[in-house]
Length: 374
Image (tube, rainbow, N blue to C red; front, side, top):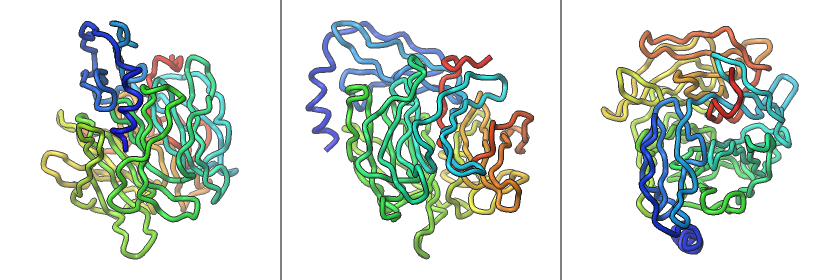
């Protein structure tokens, strides 16, 4: 289905011959698997594309220069002590950033990413058990949330991954609140906000409350699952590889050491190697790291507190967990920000706090220079 959709739209996109693009600082250029003749950028650890992430050649001119910028975190929606929220904030431990307009509606359990030069947020629950299929895209140029194409169905608690300029959403709960294996792909380079979502190869099994990390080679490590039935493996971990024609190929990896759902996950740099860090989950503050070379999990330092539904990303080069739900505390939704020091194998709660305690927010690494962080 994906290949056929590409064939319908590509002839109008790729025209001309362009000189080679300049090699970017803090990233590498690759041939786009989504758009024939186009280039995509893969940014280094702690960086994100400054623009759309894909450059097309039109009338002998590239559509943009592909560059990378240091990442800070955008948190969108989630749950605060007063209920579901539409709050949007930029988290930068080293600086203060611009205030952003709220999302057009309150939302819990949405997902999204930085794609097409925009922060895109999809699905979730505007109110409990009311699934949404709506998507919104924050445009830095307009400082506004724009309507984006809707998902095929309303769903909550999917997981998102940005792969070479495309946004992939996997799993989540459908409108009957059952876990789904549905995957959908959005590639704004094909037509901007007019580009529809395309259903892609499904997950091997239903999944929700899971977490996804994109590796340097654009493969994706997916961890955890909600225990919808007694035979669900919450420690499940999987690998996704995108084939040459945009197909999704899934394979199994060793289980995590602990059952997890609604946990945080991100890349982590350890001894010059990029690995996957997962932390928190139901009633735990434990953490573990996956080594993609040895294909094994190992325990690392635990956080001082349990953390459920926290927001995790590499922020200014450091794995950072923001907020989260702590059952034994009052208030339960936390405003703390903690960072993992890989060299010393320890978590540190920093002085800066979120504007309000919250959990289950959408976490989107975004380019720092676009958000007036000083």
